[in-house]
Amino acid sequence: MSFVHHRTATVDGHEIFYREAGPADAPTIVLLHGFPTSSFMFRELIPLLADRYHVIAPDHLGFGHSDAPLATEFAYTFDALAELTSQLLDQLGLDRYALYVQDYGAPLGWRLALKHPERISALVTQNGNGYEDGFVEAFWTDVWAYGADPGPDTEPAARVALSHDAIRWQYVHGVPDPSLVSPDTWEHDFALVSRPGNDEIQLALFRDYRNNRPLYPLLHEYLRTSGVPVLAVWGRNDEIFAPAGARAFARDAKDAEVHLIDGGHFLLESHLHVVAGYVRGFLGRVLG
Image (cartoon, rainbow, N blue to C red):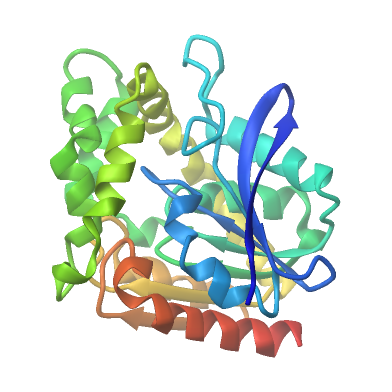
């Protein structure tokens, strides 16, 4: 049985929370969560990987149990969050690891890979976009509008994503049997984004999201030239990042492995063991 440890590290003056499990001398996999959740989304996946792998799952600044300085005290951008993650991994002495990315974790992971390509042993993307192909227009129109022209005309539509109903929707949409998804998930996330000042943190990241798109050509070149193994395991009913976003990885990554599963955006909540099986099989093949 693998025990999951709950730790904090001081990174650039901020307390960053992370979950850690598995043998310290085993190959490392770093799990990077999405919006609006935290490493809590990996709570059941970690024990399924930790018998063979050293698993690290941090909470990004402003999320989960990590510090959440006000948006007036810290400039929340994806560049800044990626830099904190990079410093955390340096502090933990990790110079070689696989990445498992989902949603917001994807643009953070791409920055880590582009900064230190020699450190990345494999990439697993679970509904984590790296191409223009995957964006579902109905979801992203308001985000793009707010990022291009933030103000009273565009902010109300962006704020809808912070509502209880919208967070619940992220968990249950596209899930054939929504009763499999615990309400603890969306209640947990809603409580955290409802903390005083957290709305402004999330809005800052909504505004910055468009700055992830210029990274995509650099990511694609990295995938073509590095030969890094890629697994895309995707909820095919996701109405945020569509299956085209998963299939696109096969254009640039050599022998990319793509699996589309009958689930939604937070696939681990309904298909945990299916995803874990694909991840274990993939890592077993590419890491040995």
